[in-house]
Length: 64
Image 1 (cartoon, rainbow, N blue to C red):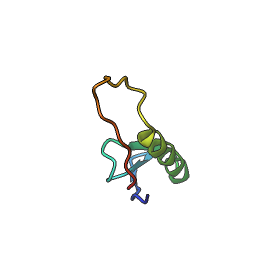
Image 2: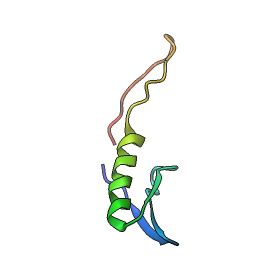
Image 3: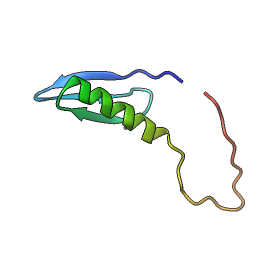
């Protein structure tokens, strides 16, 4: 899976976000730190939820 990562300077930090993953945003004091942080944020964003699912629910997995 490939997604875009945008890193932009903002005052005294660099903001990093992924347009394809709403709410997946982080920052760093340096561009390199912002890059490292967004990679971790993407990994956490895509991690399966541990939310309880009712017995009647149908679940399936998809590959994108």
